[in-house]
Image (tube, rainbow, N blue to C red; front, side, top):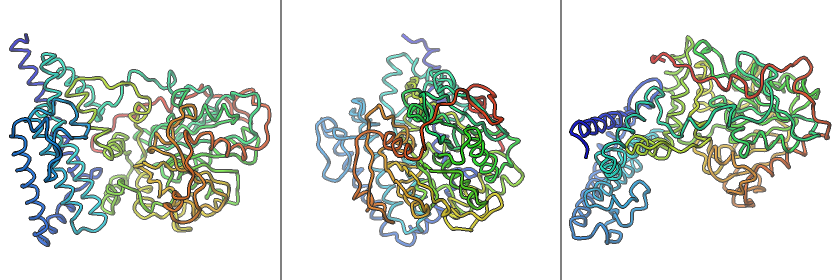
Length: 589
């Protein structure tokens, strides 16, 4: 039996966890340069109420009626366990499909009422925001803010209202809560909830272990050349440009799900840009620097090392945007060093940026420009929280419940380890990027902006292009990735993969999972393309490798050693840049 002291510590642990979770509920609504300002949206909702009070009264009346019917149903004998779907539309405990409330503990009358009342209120809030007469941006923002509050306010997220956590605490005499509090204390310095057992992985030990060497480096990036796995290789090497928002090893996780290893095994000499996790002193680095000192420098180095005039190049997400920009700059300079381009989940025309657009409006961009006028670094943790908030139930609250309320350690998962390995971005680069892409969509218009001293014109990209989008992508909507097709002038192969931004791309050929679509009707309409497309089982990797082989040139003897043409081995892959953790930043940044 637990002592009085143990019981007191248990309740204190529960109170401490509760305090932090309540603070998390309010966080999306706080103001600041890096936060989503809800004040204007709430003011517009208030004005909508005064303009159309009848609609709001009707919604309120419906809410009262459903809550009353719920109360009547749940106070009838045995209703929580036996009743069917309620005629009034209120949820019923016996038919709840929401995974947060599936456990049998939620069938007890009190907790059944909590969960179902919450679901009724959630629907009421969604209807209130969804039917409001707001301008499109504010309406999207209102829907996002409402969903953030709904997700955060779930009774599953709090110790006093989660019967599973209460039962576990009783069974373990408070040990689960004590472990949960310790998990919370461990996470507080990171500012992020742990999504995986971070002790299970280490870059260079069981992640990013494809053999290779760093053959060039500057202040911004290292260039890795991977060791060949075949006796002969394609003449043209392949340069991969990953996103600078995270680290490159999403493309080189473990051997069985490494796109790098797969490409090497297909006979390609693969090079990788490894972006630096920038320290505070690099806050004035610009988009132009990333294009010039990063991508263009890497393209030139790869061509020299392998002694070829043209290479193949691949870019992922913002890495694809950087790659396309760099090639356009080179074409403006009358240089044509890229034979083919592969763009994975990449936006060039930022016509619809999905839910990320709720964060970026004119006021946000101007705040960022003021914040980074004299330098400064955007914390990687802030971007990680932003991306996680797009799927808060899966990427935040699920782990809050399991880690803190139940005291569990999340299982090891390489993709989530990578996702948590955040990187800082230079403030100057970030401010330019969000203005010229998300806010103003300038890159799609020839000559609208200049990069590296030349007018940018993406229509100069006339080499063969392989464009991959993922159907459930919440960061790069697939129809927006498709919108890049009118910009590119070369022969195009557009492919749509199942799943989301990461899982759809990192889908090993050996797994046989998911599917992908090809050969839709070319044109401006993405839906028409999909309607006429052919579905194929499994991964898109083999399809891409067959396409890439056609642009690889002749087969030659594999290089005996990395480097060449004055480029020598600096250190073994994956290099020290990718191992560097994000430096702690001044809280004022």
